[in-house]
Image (cartoon, rainbow over all chains, first blue to last red; front, side, top):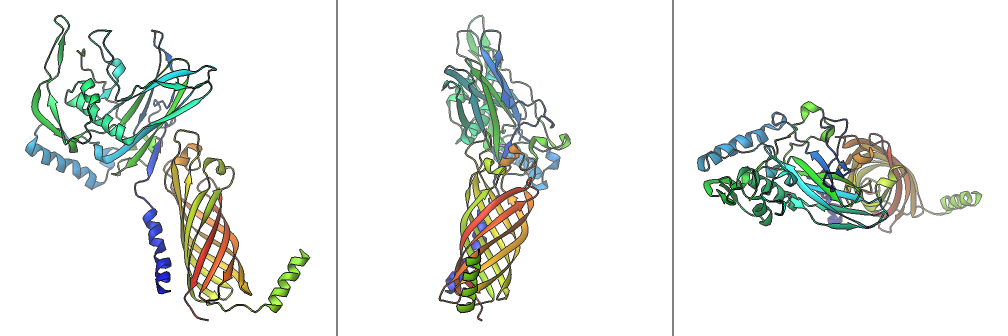
Length: 290
Length: 185
């Protein structure tokens, strides 16, 4: 009997245990917020070559580093000191992989009376570079286009139907690593996408690959000796979506965050502009890809 | 109605209340919570757990504190889809009632704090950006069956829950529970 009393008395503790401190935060576009240019409902337009493409983007509501907890701010300095001892020249980013996990949920609606096909390409930006596979020049138009960070899978959609999907956290993790590999370590986009790096402990920096259109030869791409340890990999701070249907359709998407370090604003993109760090880095340009 | 009143009068006049302890007590219950319209369309009914600890002031009145949690699947316009959230509640309440034979009926009401675990209902504007907490009110009624052992009773209760800061979201919270009363008497 006494055991039962203890059991009932301890039950509140189990309820407290059920309260997770890692609850998801859903990020949606905030048309009246600090990043009014974000687009979460993507309506494709003709790109001039007869193809439909729509572009959406959504920022991660990261707070300015000055507003972070002192311990979290100090962690970057400590990490930089640690890395400088062995890998001098590697810059520790402000927003790192360990700060949060993110996933992207999307839904496509087909208002047509005929079956259609579409592709959803995931691209994105870290704090230094944005990557858009559709903007990279190829040596030959016959060459396959560079891959997006994830997606690019043809999906059928029934007449008047809807199809939903998700880019999972592990896909976004891999995408963030690939993005950093391509833009910081000069890894070829094809090589980056075709290898799984999430279990790696470091990325080896390479020299930029230069393509000579006259000879068709590529030079460079050799290891520089500098390695970027996993602790210093950059996280995605902006999700970019390229939506490519074969007829008029719409795509809606949102981002789901699981925050491990309190650097995300509770109010999401509805937070006051001064309380958000909006990263819009330049588009990465690797030159002409061989 | 007249027959019911007559039956109650007969019960109270003839049935001798079964011995029941009064004093400190603890309750643990489980059940289901269902949001009422208009928010009922944005979240499914979900399982709930609640624990209550209190003190009988008299045989007909008690006060207590409670903590509870319910889990719901959000059914907001996608995306997101197939996502769950939890509603945590804690506070204090009071209960008035009486034992008729082996059955006790009661009415209860209380106030506390309600917390929503995520902002998934922000999309339908049930919660404002950054809002996670609300005052919570609840009120309802139930009955208990006093077991032969005077320390134990089993019961069922139904409450209406109101959280004003969450756009006045309302829910029906029902539960079955086991009660243990420590005291004598």
